Image (cartoon, rainbow, N blue to C red):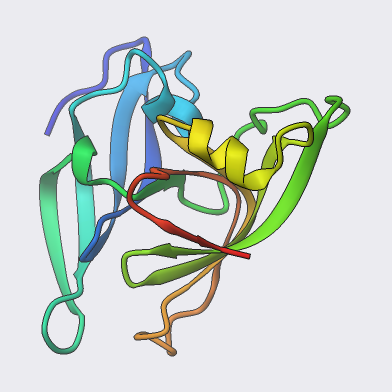
Length: 170
């Protein structure tokens, strides 16, 4: 476990992979907006999470594991967000012109995210999706797992998804 420097902070996040949900604390510089961190040039190759809990989905019932530290390759991350109730400002201006919003059902591993995506009103949803090569933001998300009906829905104002590794349903 690392000690925080005076210019660092700890943020509780949730990380989704094809077969796991990991919840833990990341350490970043104070000026880093964690909600968009993976879209920046300063994004790490591995997410180093402290005090982590992992819910693993394999052949059979989900299994829970605890780790003092865990390293998740960013290349395997399907989605990422700050754990509620914490939040940061959204990454867009509400009055921005020529933007449309589409309500989606997004398949993220074993999870279903019902969320809004903003896109160019000029080119349409499909064309806008084709142009995304990195992380994409979703808004006002409700996150469920059909395999865990006892798990309450998670509500988050904003999250990032890797559009190359998830499915989008309209």
